[in-house]
Length: 196
Image (cartoon, rainbow, N blue to C red):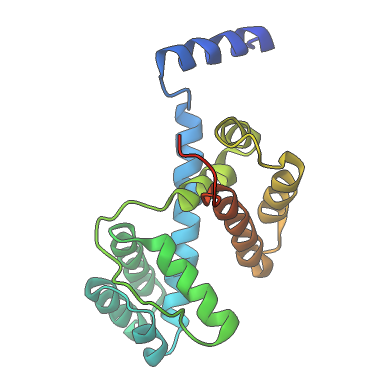
């Protein structure tokens, strides 16, 4: 069944009035797929890092243990099982901060200063949640973001989003990092701005 634009707009207006979540199961599934792809790449990057570099990141002990076990595995099937365990442990902590630290370590050669502990079960930062949502939902998430942040530039964010989605695998991390930085800059409170 194809719905018209007016019926979609009516449904969104009713949802806003009811404060319901208008995300479909498909949106949720795409969002989970993006998170899993990011976690898979992060797990692979952690396994490839040298032992000393891992300790510079200030990873939680359970993550360090499963990464060490995965590094010892050489056979494909066993290593893939261990990579799934690494992803599971990463889901339990602030994986987006770990991802940011790994990217900075690769880019600058040193881990960022101020290694606060990465707590297990901590909530993702708003820029992490928005980045994942933008990557998975595309223009729908961009519209929702612009409703919350009307001062944001639509064209700039759309360009960054397109670059992150279409980038070659070796450049995707940098494109996602630029998108996250732009979202974080928009979400950052401006000095002198009144709080809502």
